[in-house]
Image (tube, rainbow, N blue to C red; front, side, top):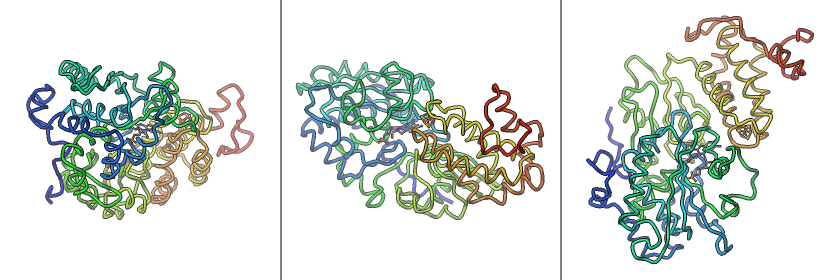
Length: 457
Ligand SMILES: Cc1cc2nc3c(=O)[nH]c(=O)nc-3n(C[C@H](O)[C@H](O)[C@H](O)COP(=O)(O)O)c2cc1C
Ligand code: SF4
């Protein structure tokens, strides 16, 4: 065991005493990336980000430079850069540590990103519960104004850039970029129909880019050090250092920085190995919305392409490790309850399906499920996946479908034994059936996928 692969790149100032003060930040290379950016044309900044191969760290892995090049120019409308600092995905903790350990890094990234797309106004939409990060960012923004890095004349360049911190209310759906824009506009945060995409019609119907904290914070490093510095890590399609949160049944769960491309098994080693007496059973490579994978997949490389080939996604950099003492049905039920709770209610498959799925899973976990329930889960998931308005609906189905694919035998054992075979949840027989719930809600018609025999509703 050895943390040989952990690196210090974007986390270089983590732990530096007083780095939330602008002078200390400057002494450690701070705002050098911005100085370089001011010597460059906007398109040169975008080209550097493209050459470095930076891919969005918010979940989808879309190339950041390409995204910036799509932002409509010359429309006569203001252009906005918005930082998505919502970080609500279960298991994900890499953006908050970045903002708390090195708040100026994000402020500098926002200014550089603004210069790249000719924006004069940026917003950081921060999850409201991140109060400490909020205090530090407010202070960093105020100091950057005092020092002339922000405002009407950024470092005497004649270019304007203003930055506003917005403390969002904290709903998971407000991390979805168009829901985030609605929430920033003061509306109820619900996803918008796309197209038009934010690059053409985003905040206040103006050209906008929405990027993750880590994607934005990476750019000053690339300008300060050079593209080759960034690409010394990773593979051709998955470049750079990566901030990851490793959680679950490892000895030292925590926030680590690693080079892209290492075998995922090394992520466990970096986190101190499995807890004593625990064997790896399954894991989520990128947060709860990425399909879980069985232990055999742990030797795949930590790259966008290898993880897709293994049947999942890199997602949000949240590596969740589950040992042989965990019940897969219980884990899947936990995530399903989260998505049921966080569904914004705009579309029927997700709003209704989430409820039904949680009920059926709870029935299975507590020992009163039937084998037909397993097919029912799959059927409901098939009716949600690709049919919901935004990706939250797809995310809801991911753990269930992957759980059934890799651990069907464990689901069946719950039914056969009439209890959780791992003893995680005590048996219960008072879970309402689907039909009872439908009846309780004003003679609603019982959906066709109910498992209850006809006539009982
Ligand atoms: C339900 C939902 C929640 C999301 N939450 C976040 C989030 O908290 N932070 C984030 O950066 N992206 C989140 N995303 C992805 C964003 O929609 C968007 O793709 C991302 O902010 C783009 O940034 P990037 O290109 O830098 O990755 C979420 C997506 C969905 C569907
Ligand atoms: S999929 Fe869910 S979260 Fe997304 S719009 Fe539909 S109800 Fe809302």
